Length: 282
Ligand SMILES: NC(=O)c1ccc[n+]([C@@H]2O[C@H](COP(=O)([O-])OP(=O)(O)OC[C@H]3O[C@@H](n4cnc5c(N)ncnc54)[C@H](OP(=O)(O)O)[C@@H]3O)[C@@H](O)[C@H]2O)c1
Image 1 (cartoon, rainbow, N blue to C red):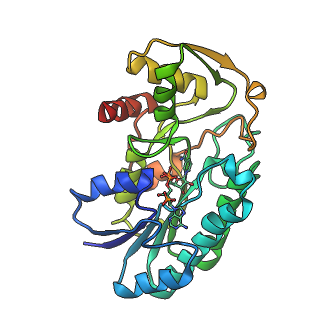
Image 2: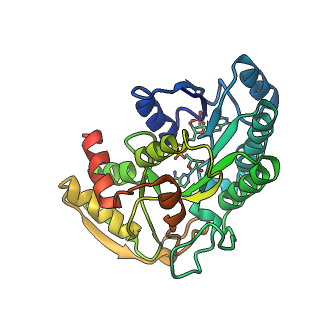
């Protein structure tokens, strides 16, 4: 049995881990942003002193991608400095850090799926701060897992699935971007993979994980409405017709070959996982 500390426990991924923890052989401590503020090194030290942790899963993040463009310091402090603070505590207390990063570290100019060693070039403040976090962790620690994921959704928190269903309540028609291509990822699938990585403790390093398959936001919205039998007209539009403060990559499909091979995974297609999330929502 391992002792596992989870930061940012009230976020989407944190809440998925909480569900899985109920039937896990491991012992979990879930701390929210007040109980453990990753920007506060003293608070981190006192948490790590109360108990010896084998793993720390960092689910804490500043995830408001557009807002980050105007709240640069806050995004930097939580995403980059916060990850650095945790990495330093993990080094001092001999804990393995499992950290979540993003497809937004890439600029999206590639035409085939991104592998872990591809060049990064974030287009947004959010992507830049998440990349800085990766760099700090890699400098400070030898025993870490960094998992880049994409388009995370679940029955918890704020996400695209819940936003579409909410908008559909008051609209007959929606315009959704069809020229940004990636892969929706069910946070419960990511949480399961994280728990599968825990007993292995050998293949440390950087990984990509998303569900299988490829979609545009338009495809994603269409399937959400099909599965929920929601009657609404969905119009495909280019990203140029929906300007946002943060620029997003046009293509950010992640190649999962490394994580599949090292951890012997079978990754579900995004449509199959979306069905499960929608079942959990209704
Ligand atoms: N969401 C996506 O589409 C997506 C895509 C790719 C990668 N990721 C990455 O996946 C990970 C999990 O994302 P998520 O969607 O589960 O995020 P989320 O739902 O936004 O949750 C983030 C959590 O971090 C907490 N937090 C914020 N500031 C904190 C601080 N200073 N100290 C401790 N906790 C703090 C928040 O708490 P409060 O609510 O109290 O502020 C919140 O509970 C993140 O690393 C994210 O960057 C997400």
